Each structure stands twice: as C-alpha cells, then as structure tokens.
Amino acid sequence: MSQWRRQVRARLQQVVRWRPARRVPATPIERLRQKFWAFRPVPGPSANVQTMLMLDELRLLESLTDDYWSDSGLIVDAGCFLGGSTVAMASGLRNRGIADRRIIHSFDLFRVEDWTRGQHIPKTMEAGASTRHLFDHNIADFADLVVVHEGDIQNEAWCGEPIEILFIDIAKHWSVCDWITSNLFQHLIPGKSIVVQQDYLCHWWNAWLHITMEYYSDHFERLCDTEYNSVVYLLTRPFPPGALQPDLVANMSREQHIALLDRAASHWSSEQLDLMRRSKANFLEVFPYDRQP
Ligand SMILES: C[S@@+](CC[C@H](N)C(=O)[O-])C[C@H]1O[C@@H](n2cnc3c(N)ncnc32)[C@H](O)[C@@H]1O
Image (spheres, rainbow, N blue to C red):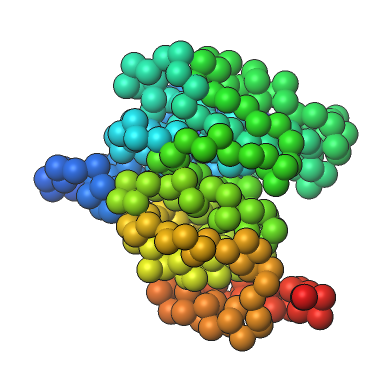
C-alpha cells in the first residue's frame, strides 16, 4: 500500500460515525440486523495491515467476534490474504480479553497473484512467491488466537468442531464454493452461526454464491450487508441428512441456475440488482454446460 493510502487510512481509523439517538437493541443478533457495527471505529490494529476489505467490513468482522460470538464454535477466516480479515476478527476477541486460544482458523494459498502486484503486494515480489511471511508479520500480535491452514482449501479436512462464524472470501470459483458448502456448512449451528459471503455484492464472476445461498434460502435469514461486497446470514434451520449436496453448482442444469439467479436478484434493487444481473449474464456465458456429466 502506498504511503499516501496508508495515511488516508490511518486518518479514517479515527472516524467514528454519528449514531442516531435510538435505543441500542438488547440482543447481539438485533444489533447485527440493525447494522450497529457501522457506528464502531475501524479496528485499531487494522491500521497497518494491507487488506482488500472495505472499512465497513473490518467494522463488521470485529463486531462479530467482539459483540456476537458466544463461544459456541470456532471462527473460520476462509481467504485471509495478508491477514486483514484475521486481524479484524482477532481484535474483537482480544477486546474481550481472550488470549492463548486458537479460535480463528485462517485459510489461504499464501501465493502472490499477478494482479495484486503493485496494488496490494510490492511489485518487486514475483507472481507465485510466498506471502506467508507477510501474513505472519501482520498477525504477530494475535498469533495465539490463530490456526493457519496453508494451501488449497479443497485439500483440507475440517477438524469437525462446530463453526460459529464462517467468513467466506475464498470462493473465487464455483468448485471452491461447492467445497465450502459440502464440507463446512454441516458444522454450522442452527439458530446461532453466521455466514458472511464477502463476494456476494461485487464484480460479475460470483454468481455461484447467489445460486448457493438461494438454493439454501429456507435455511438462512439474510441479516444485513455492507452495501457492496459482504452479505451476512444467520443459519436458522438445520440441514437434514443429504441436504448438503457435493458439487451443487457444478451439477445443476442451466434452467436451475437461471431460476435461482432470478429469484436471488428479486431480493435486491438499484445498484445491487445491477450487479446481480451482470453476474448472471457472465456466469451463463462462462459456465461449461457442454462438459457437465
Ligand atoms: C480477496 S482475497 C482475501 C482478502 C482478505 N480477506 C483480506 O482481508 O484482505 C482472496 C484470497 O483467497 C485465496 N484463495 C483463493 N482460492 C483459494 C483456495 N482454493 N485455497 C486457499 N486459498 C485460496 C487467495 O490466495 C486470496 O488471498
């Protein structure tokens, strides 16, 4: 990150939004629904950590661990990059005095992607080089809270513990999205677990998230969003045996994709609706229907 951007960001850390004079909801879930995280300052320890997240997403993540997390399950940071999401979530735990407990599981390939060079990663680093040392440096103050999983998440086996907060910023392809659905959703706690789909409201290559969340919409309540990017869900109903299908998106027909994408888009308006429509158009163009079983 450039010196200039760092300084702007450091200033923004100080900003605490004006909060309308209304009663603070009594329950963490209601505070989430009413987006009370938006009135927090940006997490202090995030100031010097390069991240792809927006400031509101950092606020959201810190409030999830500081205000919402109830010690009913572990926290998954799927796609931690240089540690931005990990630090925001660890900061919330630390605010509660938690130490020496490896509650956050952070997953990443830790390899430089060419498009990030000069933007999020120094240009001097080669594509494919390891970023693990940058991550380790950034999360050093919180290392006692974190288990690091390095490599392709699709080669991992989850430890089997319940997951109370599942932050997904890794599903850059439908195969990874399908892996997460069939391997991690079964460990969510009905009535308690939060899923954050970071890529839901962005770009145009993320339609598999819309398909997945719409397919399972009877199991989730959409709680809130950060306007762009992240959408936050509560798991409301358990998944009966067999409900979580492997290769869900990969095996669906074009007609099913279209029906779910249209239903997903119907929940949104204005710019967000436009994003959903562009995602649908792009997905239908690139998905390899001719190679389906
Ligand atoms: C958008 S970045 C995450 C940004 C991060 N949450 C932050 O706070 O800045 C997505 C990350 O997902 C990782 N990733 C993508 N596919 C992956 C896979 N199959 N297994 C592990 N990591 C993966 C990439 O290496 C990348 O660092």
